[in-house]
Length: 155
Ligand SMILES: [Fe+2]
Ligand SMILES: [Fe+2]
Image (cartoon, rainbow, N blue to C red; front, side, top):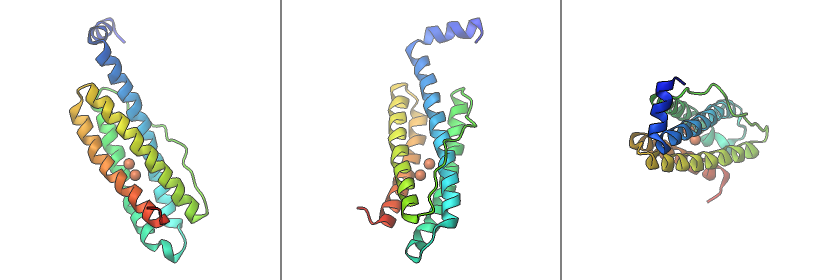
C-alpha cells in the first residue's frame, strides 16, 4: 500500500476495515459458489433412481444459478476494490444419492447463513447495492434448499 492510500485508509477508519472484512467474506462466498457448481454439475449427471428424476433436472438449474451467483459475487468484489479468489472450497461427493442430496442441503444452509451475515455487514457499512444483490441471491439459495428438502421428504 502506498503512503497516500495508507493515510486515506487511516482516515476512513472503521469503515475501511469493514470493507476489507466484506471482501474477505465475499471471497469465502465465491469459493463456496465454485464448490456448489462442481457438486451440482457432477451430481445432476450421476444421480440414480426413478424417484430422483425431477430433482436431477432441478440440480442442473441449480448449477447454472450458482454460476450466475459466482459471476455476481466476483463483480461485487471487484467493485469494492478486491481481487476475486481462484480458490475453491473442497467439493464433496457420495455415490449414495440420498447422502449426496443431504450434502447439498447442508451446503445450501451454510450458504444462506453466510449470505445473511454478509448482508448485515454490507448494511452496517452502507453498501446497500451489495446488500440488494445478495438478497436476490439468497432468494434463489432458499429455493435450492426447498428443492432439496422436497426431494429428501424433509418438511
Ligand atoms: Fe449460489
Ligand atoms: Fe444454492
